[in-house]
Image (cartoon, rainbow, N blue to C red):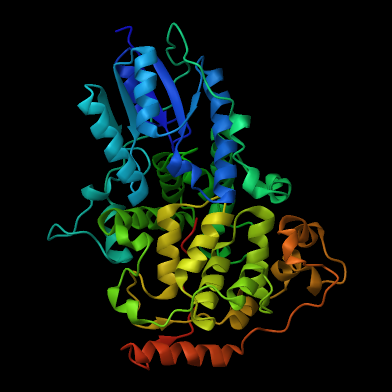
Length: 484
C-alpha cells in the first residue's frame, strides 16, 4: 500500500468531481499527479497551447494547496509514464478518458504498452455527462440528429458531483519535475498573449465563480441574450470546460437546480451543454467528422482551398461588419460569440466557397476555448456537410443578421476601429494582437465588401444544386446558437 499511483492529467485540470481521483483516493495509496507534454499536446495551435500552459500552472498551485505537487515531464507519453513507474515504484496509472481520434489512439497505445509491461492502467469517465456508448437509439445505434439525442438524455440520471478532497496523500519522495516556463508553451502567441491575457479566467476557482455569476443573473435571460453579441449573456464556461477546469456534471446539476427554480433560460442552457455532449457522441461514433465531410456526398462539392479571399477573412477585413467584428473579437479576447461563429463560418464556406477545414484549422490556432469535437461539429454544421436535421441548404446573410442581433451597432463599434470616430480600447487592441506582417492600421479606411452577398449566395446555391441538392432547398435563416 506504500506504492503510489500515477494520476495522468490532461483535459481534467481540477480536483472537484473527478471520478479518476475518487477511485485513486479509495485505494489509500499515495498519489503522484503528472502532466506530460507529449507530441499530441505539442501539436496544439498557438492560443489553445498557451491557454493550456496557464491552466497547468494554475492546477499546479491548486495541488500545492492540497499538499500535493504536479510532476511535469516532456516526451512520448508511454515512455514518460513507464519511466515514472520505474522511478517511483508506482502500482499503476490512472487517467480520465478523451474521445477525439488523436487522443484515443494515443491512450489505447499507452494502455496497451503499460499492461504489456505488467503495469496497471485504468481510464475513467469525467469529461462528459454520459459516456458516448451509453446513449443509444432504440435499435442500438448512435444518434445522428441533435433533437432526438436531447430527448434521450434529458431525463437520464447524471451522477451527483463529488466535492474535492481537502488533501491528497503524498509519496515519501517526489520524482524530479520539469520547469513549466522552460516549455515555453506560449511562444507561438507572440504579442497576442499580452492582449488576450486580460480576458482569460484560469483555473478551478475562476470556473466555479463564473458559473455562480451566470446562474445568479444572466441565466434568466439566456434564451434571448445568448444571441446578442454586444451583451454579456452567456456563461463563458467553454474556456474552462475545454480544459476540465470545471466538470460537466457540476455545471449540469447547478443549471438543473436553476431550471427547477424557474430560471427562464436554464433549460436552453442545459440544451447547449447537451450540444457539447452530442458533439462528442458523434466524434466517438464517427471519428472521420474531425477531418472529412461527415456526409460523403459533400466530397463532390467544389470547395476552394486557401486563398487571398480566405486570408482577408482571417484578417477580419472582409468588409462585412458582423464577420469582421467577430474575427477581431477572437484576436482580442481569445473567444468569439457563438452568433458570430455561425456567421463567419457560413460566410467562409458559402459566400467565399472555401473548404470548412480552412476555418476549422484557423479556429484551432486562435481560440483559447478550442475543443476538438465542438470545433469539428460547428464547422460541419455551418458548412452543411455535417449532421443536421434542417431540410435545406442554410445560408446566413451577415447583413441582415447584424441588423437583427446588433441593431445599435455596439458590437461592431466595440471591435472595428474604422467604424468609430473615437475607437475604444478593444477596437484598437486588435491591431496590437494580430501579426505585424499583416500591416493593418486603425488609420486605414474600412474595406468595401469582398463579394456581393446576393451573388455569393447564388454561386453557393448553384454549386449545391450541381452536386445533387434541390435548387429550392435553401434558406437564409437565423439558426440556433450552439455555445453556452
